[in-house]
Length: 275
Length: 275
Image (cartoon, rainbow over all chains, first blue to last red):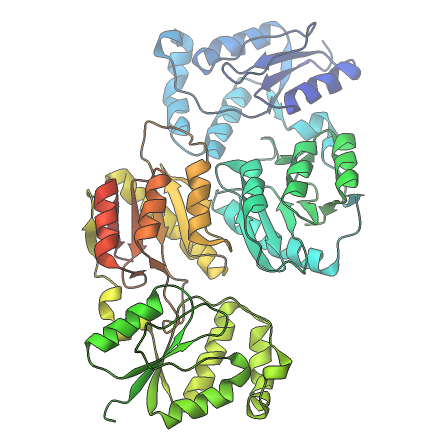
């Protein structure tokens, strides 16, 4: 069984599929476990196992059976209600430990879930352990070099993102000419960029602004790092921004070729900024 | 001339007019000085003087002439460019002190302007010195009592507003069930509440959320305190919120009767929350 099999606990979005493709190309065995209700779906031919919180204990048993040793949690999950009728007796024994987490923030929940996997003997890894090229090295990925004002705007935005990240509010900000146009909150990045696209700008002659993204200070690195992709680049272009800056080492660029192409097309910079 | 005359340096919005009416009702002499370009306009019959930054020194002279001893700066002002042709020689001498402020944030600018008035011997007061009833005492002004969850949401929002206020970003936040839906940024309160009205909500069965407003920590109290009014209440209702909470002693309620009526109509609470 050598390195063992990797289980991808898959929420929505492109990331779980990217990881599956990565493992398939490397010839590494894996199982794709779509989280019930997330809409995640495996391409034909992939080994799959359903993932239900209500049957967590049975899921653990099944993973041991098929020789899984490593687990990655990837993709978005909306917190759903538990269906009492579906809870099996063994999982019921775990509930006293899962429930307090379910009543806390996303971070606490994910830490608790990771803890449960680890106690079962699985190694839990982050997406970038499986696909290191998801997290680009510092430098300019696309577009014109940021202007001195863009650099100042990125620095101001980085300060603000650290502030709201520490307060567990969000992971992004838009700053133009030193003024904060938007801070990311629960509705997320797309909603924030649409807000900026619709907002009156204070002064049109000057710098167009920077969207900055970074993980929370002290974020559990085995949980999805924040990510951008081609759709983010297009939304930033519609918001009239000069470019996107992300914290080096802390943000994934999904579908990098398409993201770079979108930025070049729109004339936006895509800058992996040293933290 | 006894208590002297009050000069209202008037930006846009209802506040300068409210102050004028207040002084008129009290029989106190005043002059209304619309800031050039702000759109402020005095009702017929009020003594007026134009206010241009470019002729600040001449404005001071004129105020002394007419016996003004007290000044209030009220209403919104967008920072405009200076027109060099309009700058008189005496004001030109003040520019070295005004320009650095013009290049800083709004707070620094206003502090500098207040300093100039004070050096000229005027007493600069805040709007609530003239009309103390603008800043309501702690308690419930309108609507149903906040639920325990509403109280928690207001407390969380107060924390976040302190954070972004200290960072000079904004003075408001919307929190529902402990989750931050929006933070106020440059586009302001109305834009933020429209954003919330359009945002997908995480969970519909539960608390609807609270809009909280407070001044910046350490805000210069002689500059307009943040304000809400009937339009804010209507925007909060459209955003589906349970109510509005404001920091006691730190937020003005403009047109209180209409604000209270709008809150009662919409079933929203209007809560002056002890800081």
